[in-house]
Image (cartoon, rainbow, N blue to C red; front, side, top):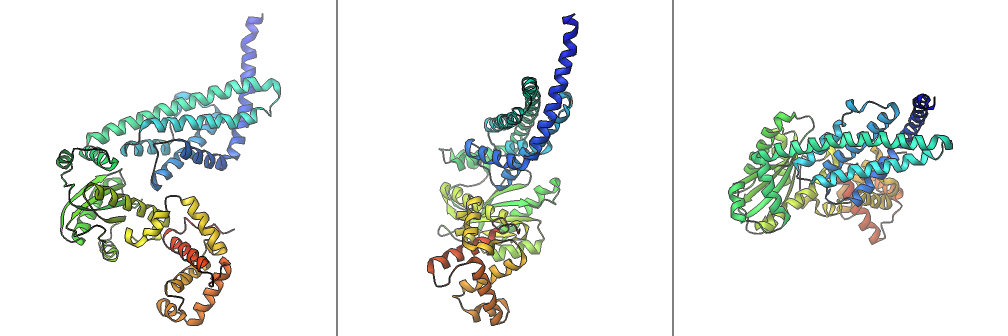
Length: 432
């Protein structure tokens, strides 16, 4: 009799546990934003090998978000594992990581770390259940979450490996491997690298990063990048060669071998930007300075990457072409966006709020300070009346609660305003 009754009891226990897990899943959904933000920060601190740029960080965050939502949906409804599919954003992040030679191990570790953290938080809600419900709920919670994490992990690994094989099968993938070795700074067979790349490494180099607008179809990206390469080569003086190596389907690294008498020779950003606008190219370009030899090959690209971080933070409203010489001080601070945002908020106070009024107050104050605090010169530059400039400067200083008589304060204000010029709205505070 007991043997015959046992299955019915198991069904009842499973039903009770399933109902409790649905409640837990809904509770986890209420802390979604807080949980994802905390998990993202923890992963960036604890996992090595994921030193991403801004675009890859966005893909990583989107992957975490969709994985979290998928896990909650699965726990709530107990979807059959046979129909589980990895979220699109997670697959996109895995493929982009493969294209950039990001190792698979830290990606898998991030996935497991997310699972562990999810269970740790979910268990806190289990402790609120009736004692008789806790053990079956824990068992079912672990089983369900393990099934979904294993299924998604398997799909992500397959997507990564397939994309990595496909990428390396192309010449661009082979080029990227050699470029990766040169950029790593380890000993490299320069002559062999030059044969594979079709590019001399012992001359003067100017590096740039180009990325396509989101509206550009994937099939048109390669031809767009080639147009950019030709345009930049035309605008630079005495280009003797160029190298174009895609980092993924939306971004490309460019090097130009130039006849430069010394390091640090700048490009003319206004000339390049005008050429971009005239050509109507739906892309953005970040340029480093000229550097010599293998060191210059690496250093110029590093500068271009810093510039890209500034341009990415500034969003679509920024210039199409930005060069390192224009933004060097800001670029050197752009690596830690959170700290930079705090610096701007501390220095500018209410002037750091993202709205139209504070925007023109910030710009007026910036123009005033770079023109040696001349109301007349600022009025001429902005085509405004002198009294208007005086009023705006007074309003701006009142909002940031700083004094023009304090040299240290003026220096910090001017620095923060320059950061806002290039990286707003990313460094600004949301209006309350």
